[in-house]
Amino acid sequence: MKLTFLGTRGNIEAKTSRHRRHTNLMVSFKGKNVLIDCGEDWKNKVYDLNPHAIVITHAHPDHSFGLKEGAPCPVYAPEDAYSEIKKYKIDKLEKVGHRKKFNVRGISFEAFPVEHSIKAPAVGYRVKAGKHTVFYAPDLVYIYDRKEALEGAALYIGDGATIRRSFVRKRGDTLIGHTPIRTQLTWCRKEGVPKMIITHCGSEIIKGDERKLGKKIREMAPERRVEAEIAYDGMEILLR
Ligand SMILES: [Zn+2]
Ligand SMILES: [Zn+2]
Image (tube, rainbow, N blue to C red; front, side):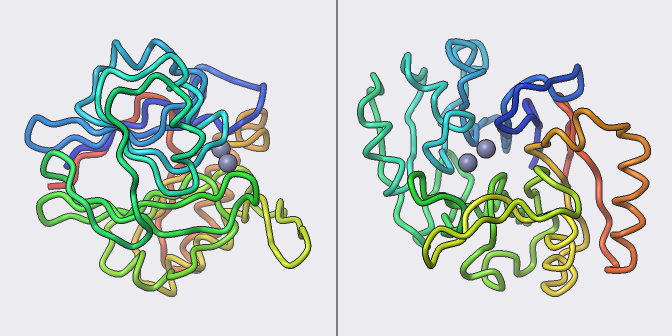
């Protein structure tokens, strides 16, 4: 399985050459390419990428508004995003059920509900191709079934909106926003995931000195016996 981090920027104005475009991930296996998320930045450009399929996490602008002009392939959207994406010119739109595994061109996906937004409920995906499993959750406060989501995963690809400070807010009984990288590293340690890749970078990373921040994050990670790396646009990871 090959992972290509085409975009690594969160829903913020700031951008750099390392984090230019909205967060998404191309998963490639045996010549087939499945794109997870298609934010506003990817509108029309998604035709150049020309994936075999697109899988969506939630209906926020930086994750699905790139589909407003249509898509070159089938699109898979979880229940909550489906009603929004249905309004776009998509020829083949499939509804994804929570915790129901589905296969896209030889790659297995399972949507795990995550807490993140009331208006645009989100999922993370457990992705399996060949013998490797990874979990991808670019925006979240927490994963409901964390143990099942992360069990046996080689990588946890998570939310880089904030390093230590909490961006979690309370709306009634619900928590919304983004949990810090530090907390996500703790989840990795608890569930035995050896490495976190940080994507969906917020202004702390994008406006900061990435070399220093990378060091700071790596210092937080080993005390949790977890490796950590900040993704950048174009970064590739090959799992074999
Ligand atoms: Zn986002
Ligand atoms: Zn979001």
